[in-house]
Image 1 (tube, helix red, strand yellow):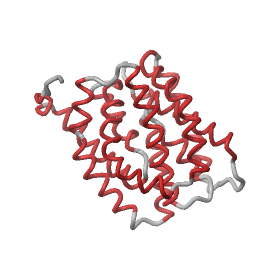
Image 2 (cartoon, helix red, strand yellow):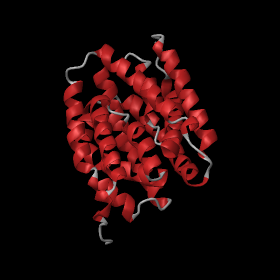
Image 3 (cartoon, one colour):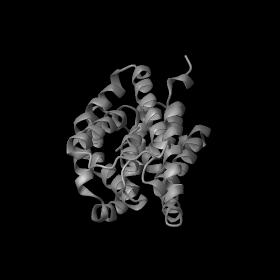
Image 4 (cartoon, one colour):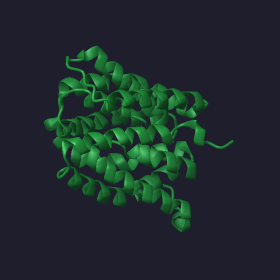
Length: 252
């Protein structure tokens, strides 16, 4: 096993990334999603996307495991299962694009689509019919591609579930269950592409404690939040994720 390089603790960028991990944990604990939207753009700028994404996977997987038991008991499997199948097909393609592709075009497509969907949802629109397994799988496929490529798993599925009649509690359970299942495919894809290194492993483990504390804080906040606030928070978070992920902010 490689020795830990604790010199990174003296770097300002490490503590900036740690602070973003803590903020991401609060958001994840509250809404069930959104951690990668906060952590990955900043950590990718401080290090590299190929460091930020696998590090995020490591600490989020470790800390989220206890929450999965409750999620698996209470989620809507009729909705979660086809979404997971759809995402499982496209996550490897997204991770492959992360390694080999120019991210600009892909980010424009993903972020623009998210902003359009948020605009529709902000009008109060909701679908009234059961979307069916095929449509659900399609949403999962979009989530898997965006997630593997840019860690934007959350917006497609959260907008999908907010568009129905599910309560915030059920949406949150669904999201935790979905992320838990698709994490298996994501981890395998990251490993296959050689993204688990000594650097990403060390960073992922060092961020476990601040992330764990923060995710508990976020869970406590959810327990006292209203449905209206949860919905507004989720839409604002999706909007912020899309805007901050636009290639406009990339220099060079």
